[in-house]
Amino acid sequence: MTCAWRIAVLCCLVVAPGTQARDAWAPGARHVDPPADSTPDPAGDPPPPDADTPPTGEPQADEPQADEPQADEPQADEPQADEPQADAQPAASAPLLLADATSEESESLNRLASSSAWTSRALAAMRLERYDCEASSGRLLSMTRDRSWRVRAYCYAVLARRGVALRPEDLATEQDERVLRTILRGRYTLADELIDRRIAAAEKSSRPPEAMLALEILAALDRPDDKPTRERMDELLRRIILRMDRTEAGVLSRRLAAITGGSDSARDYRWREWYRKSGKKPGYESASLVPSEPKGTRLVAANRIAALDDTAFVAFERYLAAVAERPMDLAILIDCTASMWRELADAQSSADDLVEFLNSVTAGVRVAIVGYRDRNDSWKTRAWDFTPNIDEARARLWSLSAEGGGDGPEAVHNALKTAFTRFDWSIDRPPPAKQPIRACVLVGDAPPHPGEGTLCVELARRAFAHGIKTYGIIALESERNLREEGDAPPPANATKRRPADEPKDGDGEGTGATKEKPVAPPRPPPPSLQRRTSNTWFPEIAEAGGGRAELLKRDSSLVAQIAELTVADKHRAEFSEFFAAFQALCR
Image (cartoon, rainbow, N blue to C red):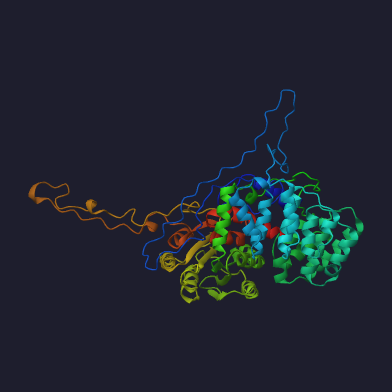
């Protein structure tokens, strides 16, 4: 198990709504059952076109409480353990059986397992982790013959987490090297001859992505003292780092960091510098999914989707089904000044993950991009309209670089104006077709120029009136006026004067007929401006645009946060879990 996954285990013991459980599939992660919600509301319905007031926000959701592991009270003569083991599965009173599932859950599982979308079938595999019985194991084993390599990878990972022992003949038929990687990371055993035969072409390849897969498979064998294996890994690492270009480094960086312990810099020159400093002999991690070989006993706690109660799981499945019927327009507006290099690198390196994931959970996604800097930089904005092509989206993101800035405010208003007025947003479709999800995500760490904050708020308000939601992701450690997930913004008329409060003739401190009529006070400013504005204006912009703004922590994944903000709605914790598994298994 890698160092990064061990750290993630400790960080994910208590997960509050809206926090980023990026490695929630790590061994030992504990989860809780979110509250059930039987009303599908995918990404929120837009207001009518003539809406003149700011949105009322998302309905309030109950916050799940952290799951406190319960321990039996020790006897007087029994020693007490100092700390619980992170990888230990909490004791259960009785195993859950698939036969005991409610009819509604069985129907949901069958719909997922028979879906044409691979994401639905993978979700069924994650749910089957809930049940410790032969029926569940048999169903998972039959799904390892799925036509999608991604679904097969999910199934083998769930079987390993459940601790299900598999026969060699159940594993030897797998032909895809990416699934082989998951099998070995699940600590299943395969013959060396079979492994060598499967990775022979990748190991000889001069292309870094193919060599990376061979390196991961050899690392998953977890043989730190085997000299021949170590020499093969050293040669593959040398070839990858010295030959990868800027784009390949962005795509491979997180995978390299997982098995070498290097920093996920997403830059080729940084990796070459690290390679020189490491003496060209780094240590290797296996990146295992479980702490030991599966031998019939559950090895890690159930994932969050498996831990949902029946009602909550059925609600989540119905929500996914509703989202799957809606196409999506996603505009990403990202600050490209020097202080945002890490966030830009994250977006570039994970663009494929984001587009592929959203394509799988919606009826198809189109991506538009705006990079923005400042007035005195080499360019103010660079913009590309919507495209459904993942290669085009990737190339456009990689054409951006983080430079300039330095004086605080940036061209936020220009970026928003470009996105809302120049891009070809999808129009409403005639009934009974489902309406598209239209989302604009603003990513940055600096405010608009003085005097342009209110203009940005007005742009977002008008866009929301046309069905476009605006979200903000703030690359700072703190910010004012952030709403908790589910909180509604202040009502538009919360501070307006009622007629009864207006000054009347005769009011004042004068006496008799000579009383002077007092001067009426000025009308209050709009509600969004009555409180002290935030540093970036992002909370006010997002609130006016029907969305919400939140902080991006330095150890968080930007693309995961974008996916959760725009499509997860009330099921954000479940989406976070699913996307974390996707990134761990499907790269």
